[in-house]
Length: 435
Image (cartoon, rainbow, N blue to C red):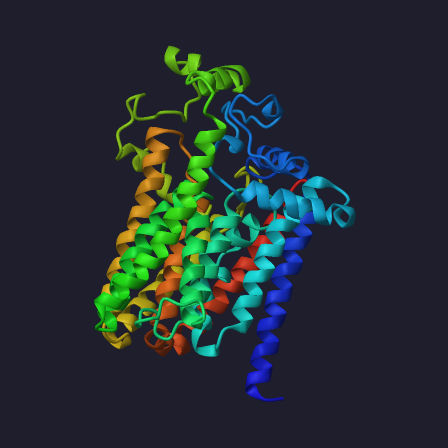
């Protein structure tokens, strides 16, 4: 057997093992033992029955409200529509509606693994983030609103990996293959922007990424033109979804959201409790007198956000021994450092700019998560940092030649993270999740 065939066999077996573990989690875990899953399931169930997006005063929403007194169906998110229709198709095979909805996410991850295997060997490094954290596998093992935008952004990573180069002058014709890929970038980014608000920062990153690529190719006008095409399509999709939402809610009184929250929210989440100062301890911590530095010194936001990025399960109740997070952190920072040095020294024009842009928007992603925890609701959860993975993937896709220089050094480290990820997912998460 040739080295190429052996390598492809190993990668295929790894992909199959990940999917098997995820499927086991999806099938065996009890309903609603994952963060907010029942609220997401109820939103998906709505679109298993209906085709129209509801208004905020629609009585069909009665069973979709969360403890916060809000429903995911009052947001712009389109994931529940697609998941509901998928679940309707596979329900005869799945048997239970929640299993059908879970397998929507499993299917999405299977597509990503298929795209990874289709990439040329020189570009496969772009999908590295999929293999070094079990938290990504976990998010795709139950039904939620985070897996879909993550899937979309890595579809964009795949498209960027297929561009050669990504910002050369292109004819405005769908007959051109690269122009079609550019149009798909716009469609995917548009779907991202109507899927999850914490991914808006990814749109800003993509705009800066076009500048980096244009600078690297010494053709900023072409980069600007291509970016305009992508963001024009994104704007059309966002405007269409937003306008439809405005139209559907055109007769809804302004006080309806507050009334819904007062009616459906848990007692200490109700607006009246917040006005009286008797709300849940994690709500509006800034108004309660907590300073921004205390978010880290008292509530250790950074520690829990890191742990929940690399393997915490159930309602943040099942986690590995703390030494696991220490070792996976050592491996992560070493890999990131090696890749950064390789990109700066061997990435050619734009390598340094790409690293700096990545660090800037990764920092903004972290900041927006801390801000949400401080101002709205304390949620030190790694899933809010997932856009960083796609940002890294996009940089690695475009500057793969420089990144691949570090492969002899980072492959053993990445394998170490993969092994630790399997340990966490199988022997911590899957073993202990309620069934």
